[in-house]
Length: 176
Image 1: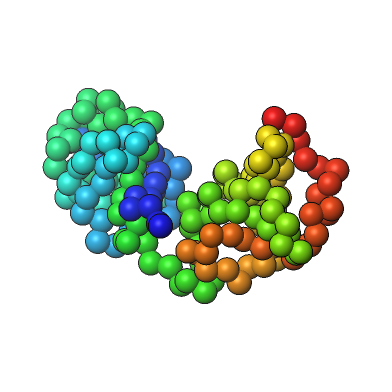
Image 2 (image 1 turned 180 degrees about the horizontal axis):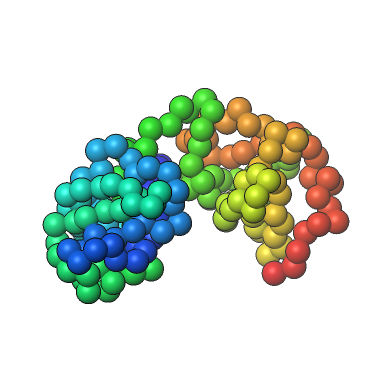
């Protein structure tokens, strides 16, 4: 089951005097139709805010919310995650995926042997990298590329399949 929330950035510096704030850790435009966000570490318990305006300033996205009316109020939210309804982010299911869709999936090698499950996804420049935690406590980071993974997967499938045998990574596992 897909999460109802998608993190779109974190609250950055206040912009102006009326409570608007920059969206840090995001370069691209905000989703179309963004009229509600939640701010806080757990989206199910976070503070709900009504978006009244979004724009860009200095090339960065800015959000103005009805409930945040002063610079001080915006500053009090600084560094907290910003979440939106994931339905606002359209995907081409055949060619696009969200990192959150990968976390929790089992990873099977080319022969169907279970390596573990994905616990984190990151990008360090060249490609996305998944962390796979084995059931015995070991872990490994593997580039999420077609040289290692079958990229023809469905976002709702319970497992991802490697195109290589488990032995490919035998020397690179880390101990917990």
